Length: 272
Length: 315
Image (cartoon, each protein chain N blue to C red):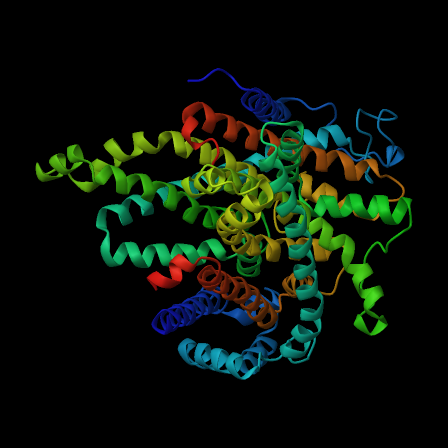
């Protein structure tokens, strides 16, 4: 492990803040996020609450805090599900090789080229818009990413002598994947998870902006930005805070991913 | 070379067939009764039956799929239930917004990213490099629709320089049309430019360290000649790949940005069709957008043959 770099420290700090805020919001927020106070509507920051109030007089800081939880509640399960499926597929393709590998990888290329927003539109058309459609769309988009990471490493591991020996002695490919491949990709996987989580938060915000993600009255950063557009001239602060929250969360996770990559494998530093 | 082209074309057609089949299955087979999806649970049985007849749902799924694809090939996209217009008419109008918007965004993003990436790599470790790295980290993190909102706040609400949204149509003149697309294209381009800058920078650095560049330098090629003849052309190959892959983000981003700026493009059409549960339009628009991404990626694949003579010889 190299010494702690600036990206690692900054990214770690921001990510910690994000996760802590999300958990804190479950126990405490300055106001109840859903509490409507028409008398206090569209108040500027510091006039009512740290970040002001929205068109229903709800406290923006409290909405942001609850939004952190809702954002992670969609992004984390979606990325984990996509990663699990992707790693399994990647390992399977690497161990079977041949036609299965060829077809699986071509199919995954196509899935990767399919924009997550379009999958979300398709799913929303049949499931109805909501967090489940958003999660499935984000998960689907993540499968090819993780499949490629896993397949690359798995191919290397499968071609090593010790794995060849183990396989000759009757060790099954599934056990090889779990015992030999997984530990070898753990580092790359953690880095990829962090970066994909950042992308998932960005996507979730976009989907919620379109009304395809977290449903009102549950607060979400994307939804807050959509609502702010109506009051852009009267209450510009409503358009600033949620965007900053998204940008800081994504920046933090990206920096953390980069920092971890540097720390875990200095050779990868210059690559993307 | 010809065999390679034929192979690529075949794989492209297979891919498009597979994507259309998936879209068809998701929208028309999985829900059981698409008519019920479109009309909601409160619909009367005779209305449902009428819509089923209009959509041809009494026929088997395979036949409907073949009819749909056959129509697509002839340019007949079916009739929108909510607009009561041929989908091809709806799409044709909106293509004139989405395609110029995407092209403008790709142009801006490339014009921004290539010089910045080259500049950063040429001054590796210096303050220019650091500034560019900070720009790219921040740029990647900022959602495009938020940039759009901030642009509206700054350039329309506060300064009043550019329209806050809407599209006057190309009939109003090139200037007015481009003016309406400028802010949306910038919002769409900035995050992607950030990604592309990073790729350009690292690709440049990789090539600068290569043997052939050291040889050229040893032979006395000057700095400018080195960059122009030996480094940049080689560094462009990974940049093209990423640009192709980014297209999927441009298309996804267009759906968002068109909604921020109220632009009558394909993305907004898909969104409106979703709100109206017009499955006919959703099916066509999603396929068109996906096909756009897939076809352009295939073209990018082929463009390597132009950019990299080594691949041509191998082929």
